[in-house]
Image (cartoon, helix red, strand yellow):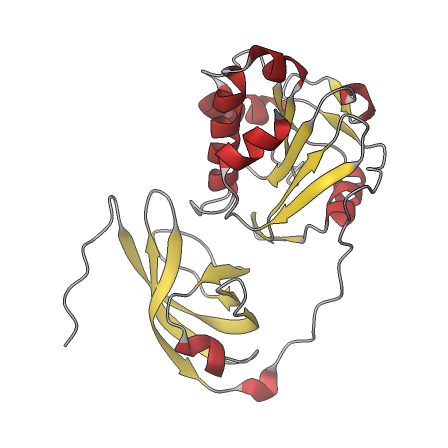
Length: 265
């Protein structure tokens, strides 16, 4: 019998059941179309971390996965997994994504800021731009919340070097324009940038028309899909040079703020 694991701070556990959509052993994630989780979130389709290695060798699209969703202040994962093999019901494979390469010129994109002002990538040339995608209602600590927290750490590190901070710009782009109006983004932004950049001079929270957001997402390889007020989405963070060209696009949430800040300096 295994010893009891020590609980993380503010750990919550929920019974979980859903159907496997896709499996990625490389990222340790399984995308699952899950049922409502009473007391936490409605049913939707999204990727989840799974800690049991054997699951990735067995699980196939269409299988039913049951287990426990564990949520702490900083991350979430599924454990105590059981599978029911139903692979004959597999959903269709997803289409390929555009994956920008270093040196690619970022298209001219226009957004609306938390103050209702127009923001274009062209207007930010002359210094590095760090861009990521979020939506303010995201419930999981290791998705949008992690991205915003990481950006906060980058901003703090850059402020220690006034010359670097003067040239740098951070953009958190919401792909939920129907809900994330400028006033909503401003309140959300204050909770992350309030201490480090209270006037939003270097870190802006923006959105745009659905068409413009989709154009930005398609260029950077972001996948997002609205489902009953929530989104299933991937994670993309891009470092753009002073000349408007891609330096690096990072997938997922494992990047380190100190490393990104060093690249921006």
